[in-house]
Image 1 (tube, helix red, strand yellow):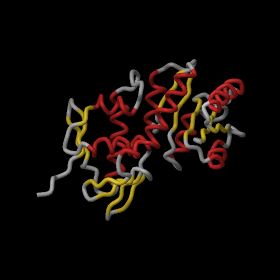
Image 2 (cartoon, rainbow, N blue to C red; image 1 turned 45 degrees about the horizontal axis):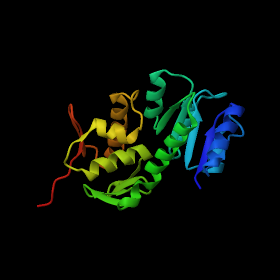
Image 3 (tube, rainbow, N blue to C red; image 1 turned 90 degrees about the vertical axis):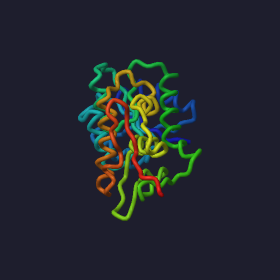
Image 4 (cartoon, one colour; image 1 turned 90 degrees about the horizontal axis):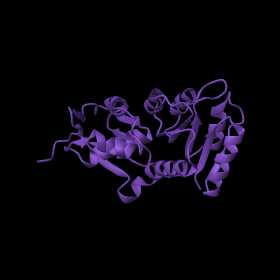
Length: 229
């Protein structure tokens, strides 16, 4: 049973969402004190976090930053605000999806299932370990390591790297990446994907792999590796 931490201050909406998710056999937890969300996070150790943007004391963006400092758990935002910058900011902070209020519960369930399937089940059809440029990519633990060290990636970052490495030396289009990363990317601009890829590069650079992902102008990205002779 997946554990979901629902950070929502509207008690009526919280109960409604919780009841629907429990019907789908998810275990749902709330926040006891909105000034100490991280205490609830540490206590629950959730498989997925759903955060409303507008919260007492600090907004959802603040708590997303705090969670990302400690964990790569998938995060989905809820928001009644309809400005595209909110969606872009949430993705740039490392969120996995953005759900607009009001929403149909079937859509909410579908998005939750898509995130959990992508994050926790994608490695069932392939090896949990991949080799690339002398480094080991651990898909289960979201880590990349070589003789220079080890870096941890978020779920989206490891998914991007996985897609590129599986097609190494080939161009993977931006549209293809966005379609797989975000089910509804109508308001996800090219800049959001660029930010995510650059974040992967920055982390890989810490272990000498920063130049491994090339930008193919006007086409997409490619994970470069020289074939053994």
